[in-house]
Structures are given as structure tokens and as C-alpha cells.
Image 1 (cartoon, rainbow, N blue to C red):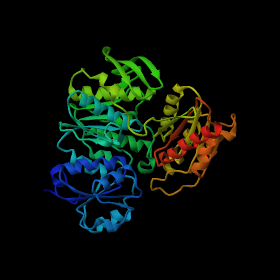
Image 2 (image 1 turned 30 degrees about the horizontal axis):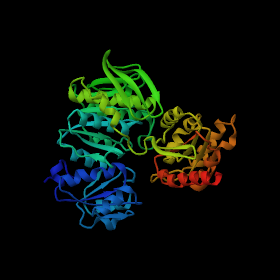
Image 3 (image 1 turned 60 degrees about the vertical axis):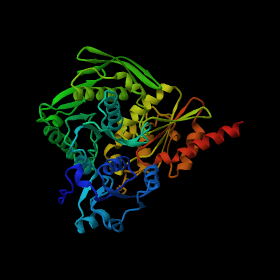
Image 4 (image 1 turned 90 degrees about the vertical axis):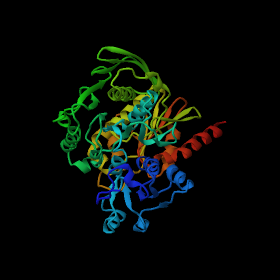
Length: 474
């Protein structure tokens, strides 16, 4: 066993150690649990609130505390923390004072997977769905991979698939630079936009960090990236073999695209060679691109172009990725993780395939994102009939002047001033927001619940309100 000030360096180093997971209820952190259990670690955890993951772990006998604090560190050998908490947090500082190694989720993950070949999926948007598609296709191809996804996969009931093969497929997080811990044999970068500028300071710095990460890959390794609009600065000094992907450009392309409300169909071509038909079970052109990225990664892993495309049709979805919660009183209710203007536009375009009008409930995620992207937020809801914005999910940030939910709603209302301004509102209470949407939603409309915070917790109340409206009309 080799324990340094930075923590373990390989899976066996965790054996019989007490590992405390700070933020265990998060999608990425919860996926570490089965990996750590597999190598014989003893676990405990804490989080600010209960959710499906914390309740599941507690029911299985794993100690999970509510809240964060130094009192959790008794007899702890290693502290692993989510990127959602500051390095200055009292629990982290207490661990450092006690000489307890402190690892980010990404550093812990890199150590746990150091004995496997890794497919690492990074990028501004689409990481989670792309990661699961890659893992599902590799499993169908017989590789039996470990798969770690930043969300709950319906087919798994968690974000982790514990395969016994030589490959691991992981979603890596560039929000705090921690993705650089991963040393992939295949890297997939879905796209790159100005994001997480609170950490990097500028888009140029973000691109430079990607260039450094990708530059560590050798010429025998593979990089999957979008064709065309990808910043050259992120590829400076990169020698890995590049596989470009696009709907109508790149080495991998989609042909004969048919978009549908329940998914899409197309044919996949690799450098002009037809690989056959592919059915993508989630609607939207962006999901076809994600699927093409997955196909390219499988080709890179396998070294051949025989990909089980037909398996993608039954891959299922990751929770909060265009999740359909039913139709109540003629109104369809859809939940999605979209929290960036690009994601919001793509999700609204996919929902429009159902027909009817789009009524949107949006919870902004992080004040810094609203501050940095306010002009883009102002225009990204153009396809919505009505929009109500609820208070920002801070994700440990402090409020910033002019970057809250009220400012975002005002920017959208100003942009949509040629429309009825009353159809864009800010609401401090979820109940008022739900009442507003129920008053506008008509038969055939869709209500979209969007955001990366805890906005999904309002869904039972929304569905109940629609059911009550139906009962009152009868």
C-alpha cells in the first residue's frame, strides 16, 4: 500500500482504508461507491440534503450524514470531495490540518481506474448521454466495460456499470480543471464553449488546459471531436489520431436523418462507407451527434468498423435527459438538465417535435454562469410560449449583483418585448411558478422543467396541479 500526501495511486491502495465521500449524493460522487467497495474500501459520506442516492446508501448500511463538518473525519483515512464545494470549506481544511489526504473526485477516479484503458468524455455539453451511449455500445460489442456516468441511468438504477473488462468509460468534469488527472487512451470532446470562466478566467485559458491534457496523448491514441467548429487553440501540440464527427461533415457523418418526437433515425457513414441504420432513442439533432461520437469512440477502442449500431435503440436514457413524466390533462411534462443557452435551444427544438406550444420552467445554475452568458440566455428561450424563472441554484456560490434569476428573466422579457411581456416572469416560489404555467398550458402543449439544480423536486407538485386542474374542469 502506497499512501502519499496526495493519496493512493492505484486501486489496491484503497483496500481496507476508511474513505469519506463529501457530496456522496451527487451523480458523480455516488458512482464512486461501487468502485471503492469493489477494492475493499470502508466508506462513509455526507451531503447537504437527502436524495435517492443518500437514501439508497443509508438503507444498504453505509453511514451517510446530512450536512458537512469536521466531526465527520474521525478515523477517516482519505477525504474525497465533490467539485461543488470550495477547497476552503471547513471540512476540507480540517482534513488537511489533520494530515488526512484530500482527493477530488477526479483524482480518486483516476487512481481507481489506473489499471484499465480509459475512454474519457469531456466537453461543454452532451457528456453524460455520450458516455452512456459509448458504454452501452461497448457492452453490446462484448467489451464488458466499467462505465461511470454523471447521472442515473434508468437501466442501472445508478450512474455506474461494474464491468470486468479491460476498458472503462468515464465522464470527466472540466469545471475545475480536475479532468486533467485522467490519462485516456481515447478522449472524446463533445464540444467546447466559454464555460466555467469563474475557474479559468478566460476561454483562452480553458482551451489551453484542454491542449495540455490532450497533448499528453501519444500518436497511437485517439481523439474524437466535432468537425468544423472546434477551437484550434485546444488542439495546439496534439499528436493523437483525430476522428472528426458531424451530421454533414467529418470522418463520421449521418445520412438520411429522420427526426421524431420519440427519437431519430439515420444511416451512419465512415469516410463514405455505409455502416448501416442507427436509431437514437432520444429526440433532437444534438442527440444524433452524441450518438455519432459514441460510434467513433467504439471504432477507436475496437480498431474495426463493425459497431453494433442496432443496440443503441434499447440503450435507454439517463435521468433528467429529456425525461418524459407523462401527459396530464392533455399537457406533456418533460424534465431536462439543460442549464446553458446552447443546451436550452437544443432541448426546446427537440420538444417542438411533439407539436403544441412550449411552456418553460427554468432554474438558473450558478450566478457566474448567468453573469458570463446573460446575452445568450436572453435569446435562447425564443421557442418558448411562456417562461417562468425561479431562484438560482447557487451550487455553493455567493449571489452576484445583476446575475440572479430576476435579472435573467428581465433580460429575456426585454429581448421578447415584441411578444406579450407577461409571458416571461420571475417567481420566488415554485408554487406560484407552477400556477403560472398551468394557467397558460393548453391541450397539446408541453411543459419543460429545465435546470441542473434541484428543480426536479417540483415535479410531483406540477403533476398534481395539472391533475387538479383536470378534476376541476370535469
